[in-house]
Length: 144
Image (cartoon, rainbow, N blue to C red; front, side, top):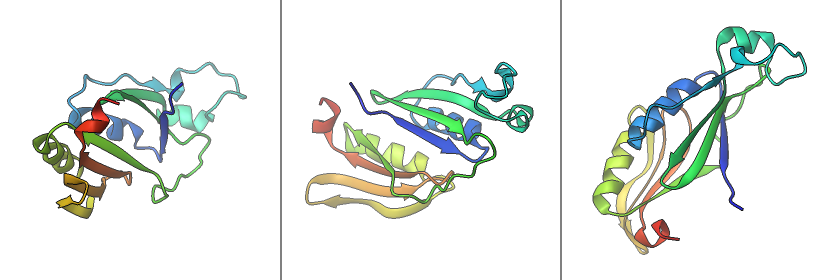
């Protein structure tokens, strides 16, 4: 059994998922749209969600882990400044720099790439969608 991530967005899920697919060199993502759901009023997502074309589900395989995404249903707003941070373990320092530099586009660097006591390269950022990331050169973690 694995623990997987499911991340909600405030109406910009499509843009975020397309951005992450580009950052990690993945194929064009597929989306399940709220408007494609049956008209059952008890089903997740309001008529307004369906009309806005909000994303009900998208998933990406990022470096061996499933990350799932959705726009927040039923008009709910989510806070992106919480205590969750995705960590990307990279096989080379060069890969670490490349992914970090792509993710920081339009975002905010919290800790610029640097050597720390346990690795040659580590950085922390909040991307343009408000999601927190650690990007670390940690080849031992890649093969766990």
